[in-house]
Length: 117
Image (cartoon, rainbow, N blue to C red; front, side, top):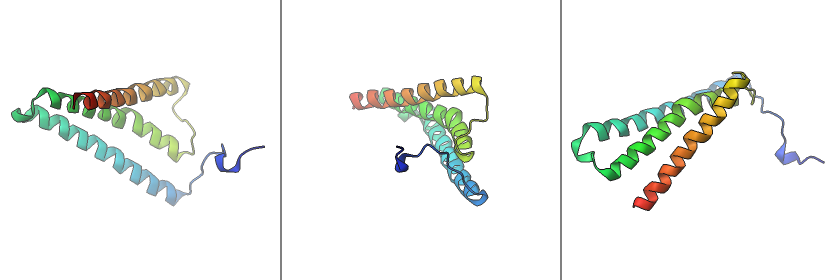
């Protein structure tokens, strides 16, 4: 007997819902890229910010930039197509590896920052 609240059926969105969700997720992705790029640029340009503790923040920003540029766009497309992967089996394996690697880098950097503080 299947649990109705944990259905494995893909979500199907209407055209208007896809546009709204796509715009919202695209804005989140764009803001993530811009915000993390600003952190990297600020630490590189301003001499007072070039301290070892801020290098950890640059590392976190770089890890989050990799998530925003490598993982999020393909995840957004997959979400908008109802969970259907459109990019082929080989790239699916590459995507999963990049997803795990980028997210793990971000999590590990957060752990190092917490130990440093």
